[in-house]
Amino acid sequence: MLIDHWPLLGLRLTTRRLELRLPGDEELAELADLAAEGVHAPDRMPFLVPWTDLPPAERARSVVQHHWLRQGNWAPDDWALNLAVFENGRVVGLQSVAARDFAVLRQVSTGSWLGARFHGQGIGTEMRAAVLHLAFVGLNALEATSGAFEDNASSFAVSQKHGYELDGIDRHVVRGRPTTTRRLRLTRARWESHERVPVSVGGLSPCLPMFGVPDDSATDPRRPAS
Image (cartoon, helix red, strand yellow):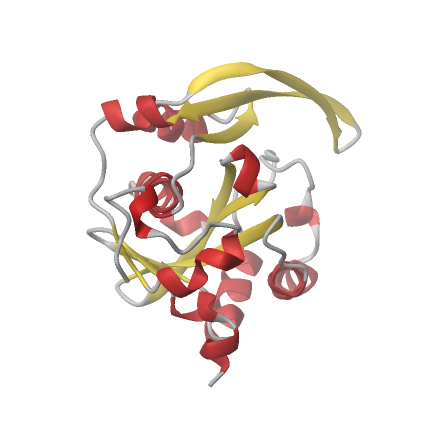
């Protein structure tokens, strides 16, 4: 079976309302359709790479290609897990968690997007909670990083709920204009001190070598057994 060779297909993150997992082919098509509908207001650009400026059909295709690219380029020392987010069985967005040299640095970064019609419903908070739980409990990470443009109040609100702290700024050019992003960092201690969304993880153990993590549950006694 394919899952024997690619155990990430069996990884499941579950919160009160959401399930996060790799999408099947038709679910990937649904995710692409959702992106084509729109992810944010046209006068805003929350992404360093302005992929949402593409026409709808090209935007949808880029979602499919990016998914395949991340799967094909996976390596234990350089990986990015792009999980489709489901609410009541429907695709609502994408949540990523990524790392380089995780075995040494034990640091991850996160990113996400939601279909525009699902904004403002608390989904962003829960999907971030899911991958932070995976990182800190499942993979025994020490830190998580994120970032957002200065005008992205909703992203900052989600990060604040989880305990992130400001970690400096970066300057970029997006749409031909100078922009400023604010970096954010969350330590394990800060994450543990904040109220957290309950998260369950399934199918993790066979995936651990793919993340550059020894399959040794003694590393963290709270690590999910399956």
